[in-house]
Image (cartoon, rainbow, N blue to C red; front, side, top):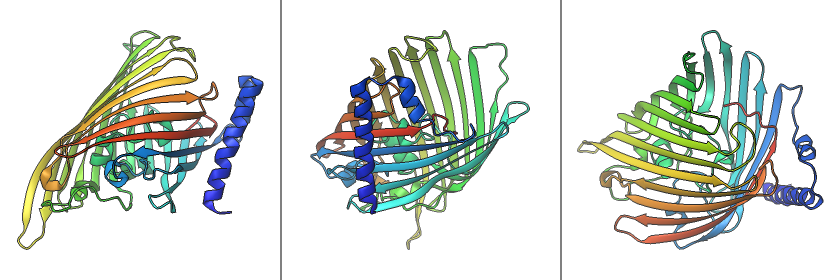
Length: 392
């Protein structure tokens, strides 16, 4: 059976199954039992499926910044992700593969993550090795099924790569001993490696001095992140993070990035499940790119750019979320990177209380410096099946 038919069959089956549960008011424990795919409480399979389609006044290849942003107005597969997690006392592992449709409705696929972790090392340490999404900022290491929006935040895709910063390497994490404050948790991580081989979409260039994509990190990459979370009460939590990434870029020179992120979360029921909730997250990323054109004659330049986004999601109940995002990119003319501004309100309705199957509607207002204003409306289907034990 062709992948297109498989995708359509899975989509229809999942919606039909969920509708049946809703109509019969099935208890939540029945739905939980259906999704209990655990093997010996050690292996945890998952299947995440996302489809998207809609309308836009602009050219989607110009509006999209991420590799899995909407590329077609017709409803199509944004991602089909089977994944597998392994959890033991001292070793954990994760792998996921992704199938998706490109702008021509052709199917493509790739291995995203495949890594292992040695955990519970005395002193609060753990070691990760393999191919993984680097710990940079608050969302780079999150897959699409954990997003609150249809598309990725623009600063992430421009500065870290159209699918984020995937590293082949090793990473050491340390949970700092902060016994003096039970409400405070802090984790430091340090990683080293190179970017996973991947054919990225071209962003930048087109008559500029340098190709903007060549400024992305490539090899000898050092990453570092420090995160601190303070739980003031069971209802109010603040998280802050500082991130760094630097190494050789595709020009054969160097690129450095520094990120600051902060998040506030309020939960009506505190540590208990359910109830209303508010999450407000912000991230600022600064990037410095050393560029070079071998010519002749040889041309060199150093360029800096800032990107920012702020998101707020209000959960009204187990079924209904409303979200708002504002994002901005400074732009660098010599790299062919335009200044951009985007506002994105979104509404998500979850068909089940476990929030595994939902539909999302999102509007994008895009403005390019000195260019047109574009309007887009997207409809997304989200299905997440299996156990909630994903290794990160």
